[in-house]
Image: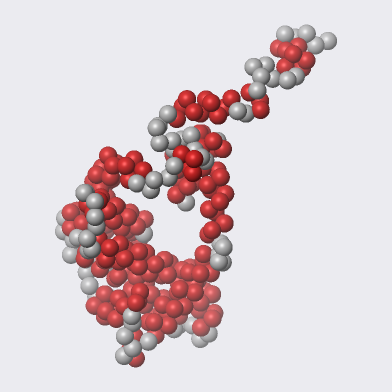
Length: 271
């Protein structure tokens, strides 16, 4: 998705093979289905979540990536306390919102499954809801691991600060994209969602001055990228012109067949 987004942002130049984007897209698209269709994998995660919810009353304590389910009673009732846009910069506020959303979506799916006499029929009918609950769980894992990393010492002057900004951009962009889930589950209000969007816009302005440096930090060479658009020196247009001359049609100033076929038409010399 990110590669396709970059291609569109490059306008017509994004179609060029010299941009490197078509080859990059062709290489990475199959990765989405190497181990099976994404939806099938999400439904397997959903089955695990449904099993976890069914065991909540048994006294068995959830551990690992589902440890938050052990606080489901609190998460099902809690309400976000955000009053100002900057409140969304607090990691604990973000984490609780994602935990509440994931827990409530899983519990709701489990309740709806119980309405079906046949469990497998229920899974088939509720496949869309189950896949969305799995996505909420996976996104929570990424957000929580990001927070854990930021609580550690990170070397490099200003690096931790930039990572904190990127974390907030990532988390709030997910919240913006899935705002319907957060509001529908009752963990945040529409007004709090609007405040999250307001804070996200402010964060974009903080990331923008350092965007090129953050990308350069991956240290991909020009040879590795193979892209005239992603060149380290930024000389995009001279290199685009050079690549255009490599096209077979541009090997000669006048293309083959011009004098024999095209010129007579233009000069109206055909009898």
